[in-house]
Length: 252
Image 1: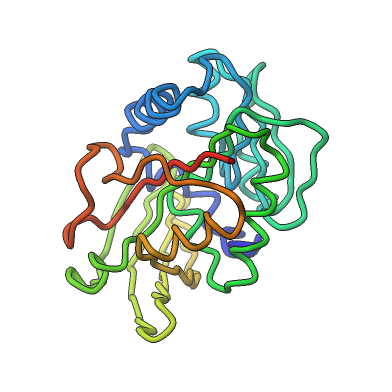
Image 2: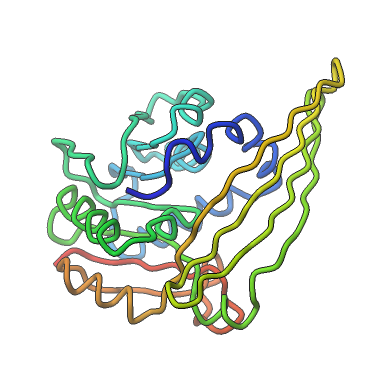
């Protein structure tokens, strides 16, 4: 079913601060252009799994799309800003069963990589399939195995602040090479600037990385075809330097 709702229970409050410098507008415009290049109509209906606080959904809606965002974390949904063309629902990638058929199903910012068990991956592909008519698109980005093995996950610390909060987050990765998994433990230190109140907490995110062949096998099993695989945001051919690879699949 992907990431557990508890994974973002405490970090949801600082999520947008940590990723505030991420160029979400450029990402959403690239995604829209990619979908439209494969026949998705501008202004169509998109289903986004792992919609978080709605950052991509709102920008896609500004471009004319109608977006249904499905998010397992109640903490993230509480912080999702409303938009007249975005509907937010609490749910997961295994059990969601909506009456609509969509033009495309999206899983952005490595949502697919949170599916660490083969049973979860099959369930997600089945969920995507039942929400698409023949010809509909299933698009997502994943951690790419050749790059994970070549670049090797490294620890790092990120510090961000705004007028209310100061946040420090240290990431410590641990690899499980036989299972193609990386568990990243995040240690947070959050300070409320108004009263200097400090909070510390930790979260562990286990991520799966994929080869092209693994995605091809999953696609074939669930009656999809790969119509594009490329480096996210650049369209470059994936290489050992390409940590995030984008796949566009079409239901056949």
